[in-house]
Image 1 (cartoon, one colour):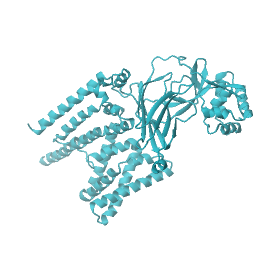
Image 2: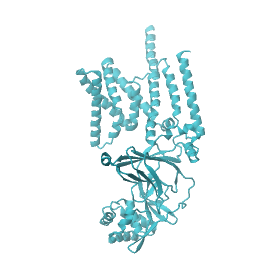
Image 3: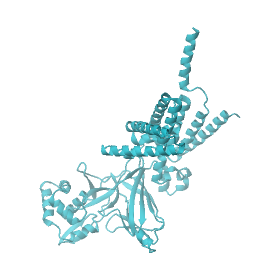
Length: 542
């Protein structure tokens, strides 16, 4: 059995396994084949990174740690299918907040030495056939303030305590009178109140904000003024769910008012009212999303990913997660931060295959195999218009530095270390210059593979000495051309979706790579070379 036959046999075996798994997942788990199919559910993950009170721990004392963290809640548009926690040594208790729809997770720990992270993960699904006006309105709290009944939508205890103090009544009444004069009904009154709350340079608004203590956001101030006018209003907090790849997000605040049996959201962009169907509601009120005691420093990151795995979502909802092992042990079950890493890693074999074809079959000269694909991955962050000039500029400056170092006759390892250091300094200088020119590219520049750039500079310098400038320039241009081809392959939305949702297709990539490796025929460029030689021989014979 010769090597070519064994290579074909292995390639066919890999193709059969990959296609079998792919077809099974496509039919049994209903994973979308195309990236632009409508998403109906999302993975939402909150990561709390904790730093314990080092001064107490260092003195041998223990400090009980308590964290209160609001949890997302179901709304008119979204419902929570499943949620779970990874909280280490913390004891967890989930409770509903009185007179509101808020949910609060309380984590307590007596020994937080090994509890550095808390993970919360939920699957959120968009509801079907929701009709306006079907959302239940939570009972609002009521309190007697200054012999006047003031209705609170979901205001916090801090706001209620502030209301007991002497408020600038004249300023409040002045703003309310202005809004009444410029409005004809309740909705237009709310619009005018919101516009007045936007006037942060108005001394009346500033006086109210000083009394409210740090509650300076427009929705919070508008809710306070509306409550003073006996209009039920509340501050909503949540996140925006988008149909795109994994992304980090921040919380968004909005204003809601009660109208009959439902709550309407006031959109500050177009100043219109509509159903709350844009955001995933996390909590209502002006409190922070988390409060901690016994923790020195705590950071929160919320990551969202559209759930392309409807089959897994269905299995979780029906309590049958063990039905499909291919879904239980898939990239889709990794933490979202790890998924973002693998979304890039699964593209590397595809780019390497493209470079292998260009090198082995086309005959395109490059500086190695992996250099162009890593440059292509860098172009994903910078774009071609910025990435190509930056790459060429860094390599040219590196060659000049390498030329000077060559005169010192350094040994190869220290020389490579010197080139690497110079490359970092050059890229740092470029980042600083661009920042002063108001070109926000510092992050993109840092994503260039520093070591690959240093090795590219070294290989280009060696090629310049051994093969001459012409061959070096050709190989450099070939590397850039190959990187551009790889770039267009790996930024394709279909390639990204298939590689991540169906990683078994990489077995097909491996099979094709093996067959390309056994190709020993003429390269395409050689056909043109030999064709010109044949033409010269024919002319000589004639």
